[in-house]
Image (cartoon, rainbow, N blue to C red; front, side, top):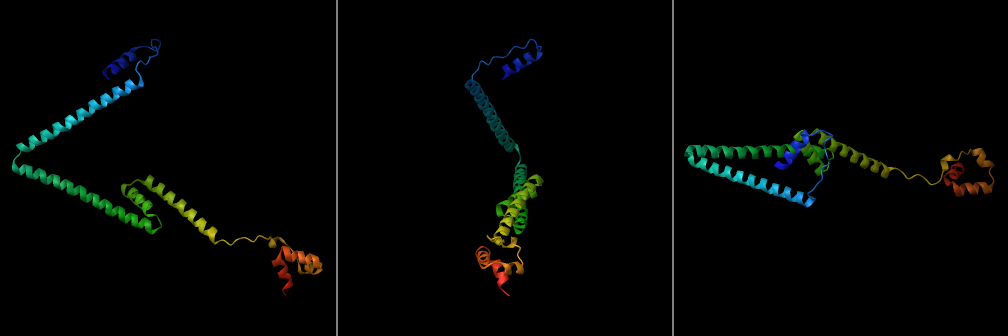
Length: 192
């Protein structure tokens, strides 16, 4: 890594006319191997730091008096209880919000997501969920309306404009054709 930083610093001091295309001499496998080695080195450093911190904490605990140890343990327990209390409060509030969302028709999954977004103050996510809910509700309402709509008749009886006088002047054959093609119109004129 230091070699790369040195090369970059040297390149920065050259002018635009001095710059030559850099030829990549390392293969992708070599670069990956270098990155993996660097990652391994950094992980060892983090592990060593964690171990050092743990050993220093043990040494510190050994040097403390009994009352200091008890007060530190109490503070740790209090912090854990406070964290648990906050988690329970969050869960309770999210459940309350989710129940409200379900009462207006949200699915349980969608209600929980909306409740969490509302509790976290994530209005973008809340509005995204509400948009999805509105879209699904609109689709459901349209489907219900389509189911309840009467089936249109296959004959076009309403388009026939015929008066009683015209019907009376029709021949028997014409009245028979009218009966076969448009029975409701025929019945309208034969019922007196």
